[in-house]
Length: 480
Ligand code: ATP
Ligand code: MG
Ligand code: MG
Ligand code: MG
Image (cartoon, rainbow, N blue to C red; front, side, top):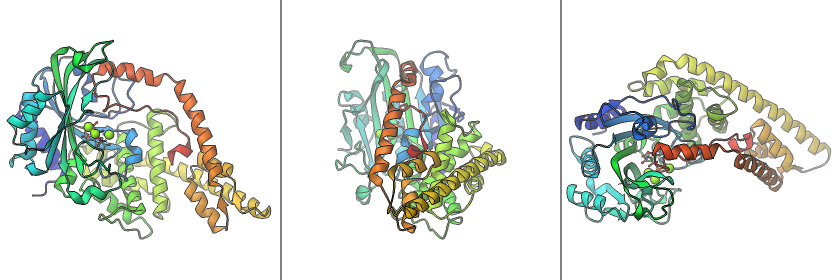
């Protein structure tokens, strides 16, 4: 039976409620009382006060479906089948309460019991840390995971340099040999390898050791007196499994946005059976409009730094992909009600605030279109000059200025130049871009913000894999 995304989310929460967990609603994407984290990027990020012992929860068992933003995955969007900027992470958490012997059989029950998700056992694989034979034995003895479906993977240990740390177990769904050829595939096909056949759906972290200062060998870390469990399951990925989507986008969470976008294009049609440039554009737009809508709905505004810059960056990328599909004029704002409708059962506030969100998006879109128009005027001058001087090429510096100041991607400059019978000095463009990146890098390394983020992470007791990027100012040239 094909479950809807809303049913899949609710079933996760109901399952853990039946195991004594308190259901905590999705929190604001903007971290509260935590100036060091740019966005909530995992379920556990909102529960920091319990994990670091500042607050003792009424109930040590918590479950949630938490909206999260990960900017480190921007480049993956539309290229891999499984990455988004905004996604929902479903999780169950034990604050010094249950541990491996409970969490593993529960995870298995939720995934395979016909009363719950009822997935085919033969398609599930797990990884464990090689020294964590305890977890391996629980998987083997307390579940009916098929023989040969456990892999020991050296990477399965989270450690942020100091403080709580421990092994983890990741769960993968085998989507079958047809997925071996997707572009993101690692030649090493095994669950845990970076590939698209074995889709990582769930990560279970066993926070069991204390990494004391000075220790370098994790077998010497002492055990923590209170052990915690922190898990994260990607809703969009599980929905793609249930709805048999080739990618996360081929689900009820994204297709209505994609279809609404199709109607705005110059006759482009989304094709869910293959990868193509236009399909990538549809996916990027669908992904980014969700992130922009939720971020603005949660009170962030476009600007030149921090969270506002992320919104600006996502919006500009979406607009440029819209241009590739021949969309004219402001369009992102029209997709907001579609996002609202898809999410209405768990996030009614999007529809309630749609008009306000739309206003912000419309003015930002307009602003960027004006900038782009300015770029076009400059480009026309550059082309006219080149012709007057009998040149056949646009200089790399001009192409760079167009991208850096006006958000004109190189390809757009090349297309326009080609229409006038000119080429672009691509090497010169890359040199200028490189020089600019080096300037940005130099500025970044003198900026201590990452150090602060690391120090706080140690307190957080959060998986470093969950929290791992810094945001600094980026030029237009890096946006596109
Ligand atoms: P991947 O290796 O696929 O990038 P990850 O190991 O970085 O995933 P975790 O940090 O373990 O992801 O997060 C827990 C779960 O959240 C993952 O198992 C996955 O289901 C989901 N998830 C993580 N990042 C994303 C993303 N960018 N978009 C959608 N779902 C995600
Ligand atoms: Mg990742
Ligand atoms: Mg992973
Ligand atoms: Mg993981």
